[in-house]
Length: 354
Image (tube, rainbow, N blue to C red):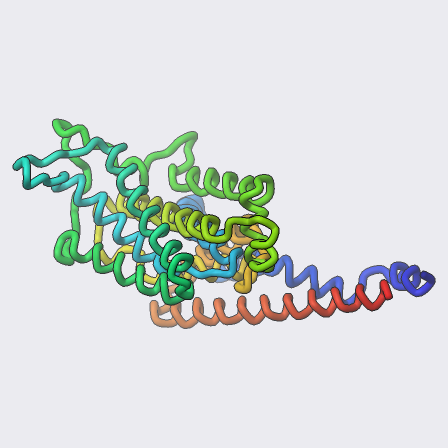
């Protein structure tokens, strides 16, 4: 008992400082990135640039939100970027060409809201398919989502034989106008994509911290066997989290197509890397069971600000890939260091109790 009191009286220890730095690494990295780019370019934090960066951050944050659910279960999703491109092409085709029904010899032009709902449903379905492959056929998440990544990218290319759907403004007589407002419209002076980021983040935070489903997600990542024995429906939960990721990816595809007023089959290439980097940098363990939506959101800010800062500085796109790859590797190394430190602290506590 006396030894415990002595340890408590020592105040802040080296371990406490290390834990603080590891847990707050995303926020610290964000501050450093902002300071460095502001010093290098006085225009970096100008009003116009902040608006542009916010839109890019929103895209990363939406993808990171869905990816967080998956990584918390100990999984991974490589298909998010391809679902972004596939969804954009589906929406673009419905706006420009409508829905052809050869049996009846007619073409139906859905309303804009119907197009959005169809696109979101397709993206969610693709995510659910990944979840079903993983749970029903016991395929590793990496392999399953690698396969669906190619399938989604192939569908995106087949939708218009590899060509772009341009000028997605619709036609008034078909009632499918207004699609471009999703990406360029504002509410209270804030772009819709940023509102989407806020709404998705708040809902995801509530789900992970307040609802039983969130506890099930954490328990699966922490110890899947123990979660199963405690009554958690493992397969259903995994299918749902992959569906959530597909839904978030579909929303990103719609936002990008709306912002560009065009859909290209290559849209979303390598987006999965940004999403994974944001989640891991935000403190979510690749082993599952540890992490938060808030951390992923800060990680998305780091990745978005870093990308835009490198572009403003005129850094080659090839070097940008090198730097982002290094960030991912560094984030994983730090995550492993945090895991080892927590194990060491847990062992110390056990020894103190003895």
